[in-house]
Every structure is written in C-alpha cells, then in structure tokens.
Length: 221
Image (cartoon, rainbow, N blue to C red; front, side, top):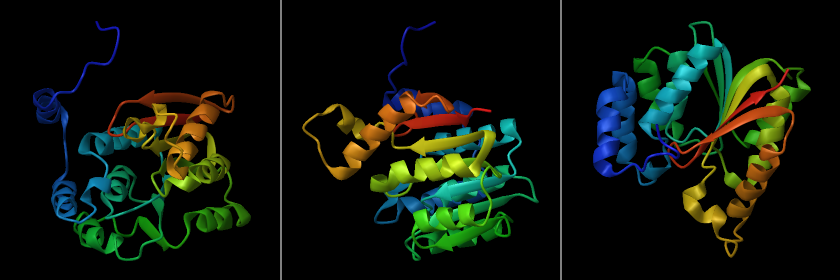
C-alpha cells in the first residue's frame, strides 16, 4: 500500500521496463531509430505505448484518431493493437517526420490500417465532422502542437462515440504548469485545458504520471 505514487529513480524505472515491457520488434527498432533523430525526445515512452495498446484491447476499439505522428512510434503502437480490419487516421503537419516510421509500419504489416493525413490536424478533424463521422471513432490520441490542444479536445469529443476514449499527452508539461510566471502559449493552453477537463461533466477522467503526464478520458454515454 502507498498513499502516493512512488518516485521513479533510474534503477526503479529500469526494473519497471525489464519486468513489464513487451515491445514488439518493429516498435523496438523504430524507437532506436527515433532516438537518433534530432528531435528524438518528442516520442512517447515505450511503457506509454504499451498502456495505449492495452486500452485498445480492453475497449475493443476498431477505429482510432491520432493527432501528432512525429516518426510514428505511437502510430505503430496503436495500429498493432487494432484488428486487421481497423483504421487509424493519423494527422501530421510535417511530411518528412513520418517517413522515418513508414518502413517499420510496413515491416509490422499494419501500413494498410494507417491512413496518414498530412496537413493541419484541426482541418482534417473538421472535415471528418463535416463528412458525418461524428461519434464513429473508438479511440483518439492527442499529441500534436500544444497551442491547439483545446481545439483538438473538442473535435475529438465530437468524433468519439459514447464510451470511447481520448488520451492526451504532455499534461504535466515537465512541471511548468505549476509556475504561474510561465505564460508561454503552450503552457497556458495545457493548463487551461487541464482545468476545463477536470470540471467537464461530459467525461470521466484519470490523469496519470506516465511519461510527461497522460490523461485518459472516457466520453460518457
């Protein structure tokens, strides 16, 4: 028993990974490739990817949205958990970054599941809404540009079915949120969204200290 989350020292973190991480070969290889990328620190941690896959399995999700692909490690994590007839619409504004991951998607046999949309994610999501796809998705992962997090949240809430899940990354923002003097747009946007979600009766929530903070949101029926 413990009254608060145990601190993760490097030895404890190594033990956590050693005794719990089940990372498919394609994911492990893509993670290694991403670590060599100039912006490699932007990828999610492997235990977060595993948690996402477990949530997809638990909910039986077949259709998913991803906002922010980067090199595609999180994309591959989600796609591997979806059934063979599933679909993942992955939104990324930088056309170059996903090219790192695409060969690994192919090696894992999930390239047909992933529908990569290059451009502004807000426009892609709005188009899906206009096409009548509201309340048709089971799962969404928000990890794109932070200044638009509030927009993405509302769009995903529209697109996700009742009972579906939305996961939001970086909700602890490296501890910057508790510094009132930090008024950068990304910081204030995440801070405002966290407060909004906390009081949002449309959803059930749990914020977890995984990676840089992960909020799991269930759209209520």
